[in-house]
Amino acid sequence: MDSKRGKSDGCTIIGTRGIYDKAPLNDFDIGIEEQGDEGKRHMIIKYNLSDKRYYLRDLGDGNGTFVKIDTPLLLKNGYIISFGDSHMTVSFF
Image (cartoon, rainbow, N blue to C red; front, side, top):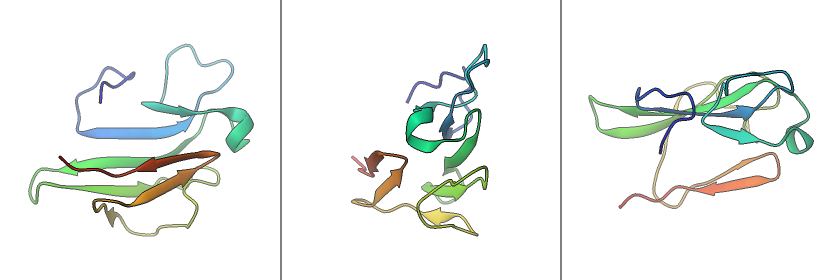
């Protein structure tokens, strides 16, 4: 995924964009009307080079993920992640 942040750090950050933000804070913006909190980072999906797997971590900024996650969650094929009124399906090719 091309990051709006312009970084190739193996991370995808999902959150809301603030009304006054000049540069995007997140790679995927949830609409403010969906989540309610503006200018927040809700979760991060990161690729771990050592075990070659993807993990989701709740950043704790606002409501975040549907279920509060205290430790990084290993993502598996077919998982459905809900945030705001949006949903994302995990698919590995």
